[in-house]
Image (cartoon, rainbow, N blue to C red; front, side):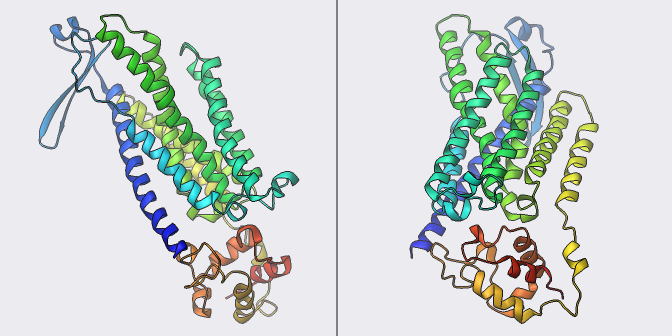
Length: 400
């Protein structure tokens, strides 16, 4: 019953997380599009009252006229729309999912026993939990300091972008060395997601509140508040596509179980940013197809890197390879505790990813996936069932 309650909580929390994320990302992308689509007002009276730009749009059977003021409008309405709860809800539900799925069983999901760093491979469960929390906090602190030190007045944002890109490569490398493959991808995405939510909480919303307070008091708002909010909002829009991709990556072991997983992660991050850049420029009236072409090229490189080498199959012969019964005996001993219609491993209410290997037919239907995750060392999780190298080699040599 406990495993079922955990699964149901995970299910509902994930639903809320996805809904909040869709709402936040959709609104964020809309406002970036709106900001980049503004044109100089045609009406003289609009320009005289401080309208910086405007956009006409048609949607849902009606027409919309959006205007942006460069300075304080003559009057602010009481029902001014604010955008922040979607960001906070997305992060809080995402963190809740991380606690339920990873921190409850850190020895399985966080610890990387195959790490080249002895201290990382030898971490206990609670140490891995502390390290994961410190990793998220350090990611935000470093990113925030880069923003404050490199471009405090928003005059060197190009250099800042390069620094943040380098930082994310370092984050990808460190996460893949410290944590298990799937957790490494998730935590790299979580570093960016944490920065996005923290940007809203610490900079964008406080700056906007100061601007509104100054306007209502008849004072001139500090222009740095607006510039800084725009800077962090732009960062958020470039983080968006990579974060979404990294968050869904836990379904695809070819990426996170690769020995150069950090390179694949970096390629995904840059590909997402390049593709997003195309749409940002397009809304400003500039079409630059080179950006999505370059993004797709990086994805193809990642696809090429993650492809199985086939070396094990080339060295094995049909006559000497193990038969299905031999492989199933290993799987029964090392895998079926979790991958069964009725798992016996504590904490599992259903087989992970719906993959059960109770029968020969079930195992044979998942041959390619079993060989992939076993050969990479990703499964069994944390090698908790003690699969030997000889058993891995037997599964790798398994032919049709």
